[in-house]
Image 1 (cartoon, helix red, strand yellow):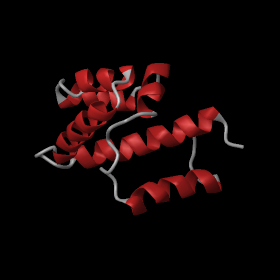
Image 2 (image 1 turned 90 degrees about the horizontal axis):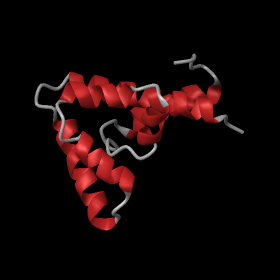
Image 3 (image 1 turned 30 degrees about the vertical axis):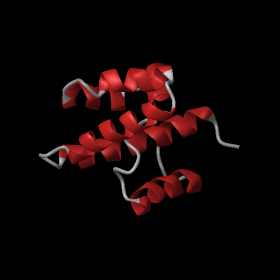
Amino acid sequence: MRSQQRIDERSREIARAIVARIDSDPSRDGLEKARGVCTRWLSMHDLPVLVEWRAILERAWPDIRAILLDQSERGARLRQSSPFCGILRPRERWAIYRRFRDGDAGAA
């Protein structure tokens, strides 16, 4: 069974990869994609965490970036419902999952 701490570490690793992808793209297409995902999810489910994400996504990229990488309980909670899905290619995401499954990933 996976510990919640290990799941949170994996989630932070995925967030770091997402941040690296968006950082490397001057047009910040991934950020716009996340805004679209959040809007779509909110149209289907008016959940408090999605309302929180909508407000976060109105901020500047450096603030959003810091929230994605936040190691606090709030950061972990937000990453559980992150609208940044689809930023990484499936192959990239599964490589991170495999590293954590196989025990090769160190503590973040």
